[in-house]
Length: 172
Image (tube, rainbow, N blue to C red):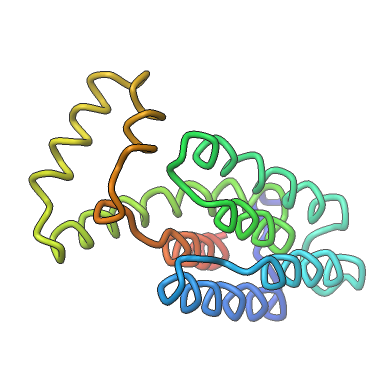
């Protein structure tokens, strides 16, 4: 039995649809609605209950919890919104406990790439890299730096979660 089991076509469709809707809403409003994240979690658990997802009910519920836990530190430090946390929980309910970790790692990579792209588009790459260098040099300053950052240096993280999660579902 492989360590990571691929998700079913039904689960992949649910994941891709939820991720696409989250991306569109997050880009437009900088919010991810609770109704969407709750629906994704409910669909993930429901698919597991019916045996249509490729993950067990325990793995689905564990994925929900692990997804929330993986994103919570970023939210507490001010790097991500609560909707991002709940979106990763919904992703975890669909993908299961093992693949949500992979999704989180791919999300971090996608987030870094998107951050550079956004900084280039806003003509703030030098400032972004300088700020990143300061945070690497003094990681204890991270929460304060994030809280006082201007809206100009922030971007919607839902697309990164969508990209990372879909890649994890495909690779897994």
